[in-house]
Length: 528
Image (cartoon, rainbow, N blue to C red; front, top):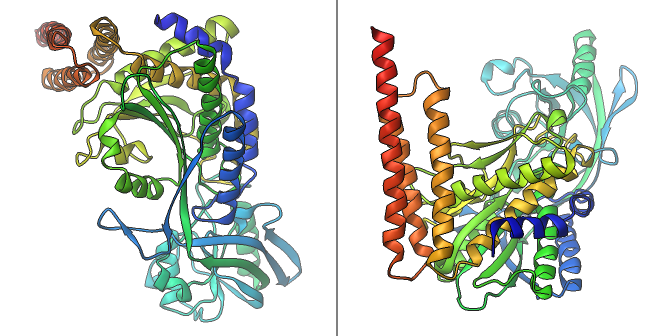
């Protein structure tokens, strides 16, 4: 099946607006890992997938705060938030924050507490002994430092009742998503915790400079032994147990629209479109397609540990994480996570090639311009677990970064761009189809050609854009991409495949040598 036909098929079928509708629904849940609202979001996915004819599997793994996965990753502990509020009652009464307006007003893993009344003490960052010049036992401290260290210094060491956190580096009227992630045996040591906007904290600090401040509040929350739930669906191929894996993390507190209701909602739309395309005969998969929605990192690690044998058949992993916010509003660019130096594969180069084509198609059809880039390898999301050298599974991600509203309560549905969702969804679907429809040497040659062209384009860009580029750097990147091209061998069992792939890798190295010669010539002229 021709690439242009695959692109146009998914462009016709996949809806950015439907994707955004799913993002809106998912972002209405406070999706803390191992919480009750995470489970509700998962049921939303299940209901749609079953309507479309999928057999849905939900894997469950202990979330008890004590089980260790993969020789050291501690299981999350179940925690749910029901309600919370913080008031100031002296020197005058007003409501600082409550969970009806933003669930992030209560820090994830705050203890439950009936109505309290106590003094507030400003401790600056709250991370060093010098910050604590006043006795804070039984009081609330106002602090801007990182969650765990402040909790240790104020609550565990000094007996503070709790902490009012704020962040000086975000928008004034937004509050930061904070969490403690305790072990089971730490639950009894936890204080009450609220997250304030910078504006709320500034008002409070102003009152504190003038005299005593008394706060009143409550938190209704619950710790319990729960489970990490992963939802899985599968479209089988015709001739192989091998499969492509698409993954998105479903977790993150409300709203978490971009991070990562966007990836989860788009993956749901991809599931709908793939089922429709296969059932109607628009595409025919030689190999299978598996989709999973996970609790980030911890759920993925638990899943991998219980599916090691099955994952020997995975051809590649594409992670969808933060894939569709208005770029002029959030400041981001759609990035393709590059080839890791420790686990080379062609997948990132193919993903970049296909993304550029999808974005260009959208520009031609809609006149809409989307910024995108190919970046060096970085972790920070679920693809990182798969490319670990212990597994060495080819993996990459589409991820839009930066985002000025990341991990705040301003990460809302208003920021989500349906056209970017469409472009990324078309790219992800097309990439998967290309890999899953490889039947012979001809198909593989096309992939090798696309991979090599991406590598050549990136190397040419590297050699001209950066003043400090060296021959050694070009050789290194050339070798990295050469090994990425060679990784395509795993997609075909034909005996003549190796010769074809070697031809493309040799072409790449020859081009690298030309770039190095040109670079050295320019260097000589500069010196003279």
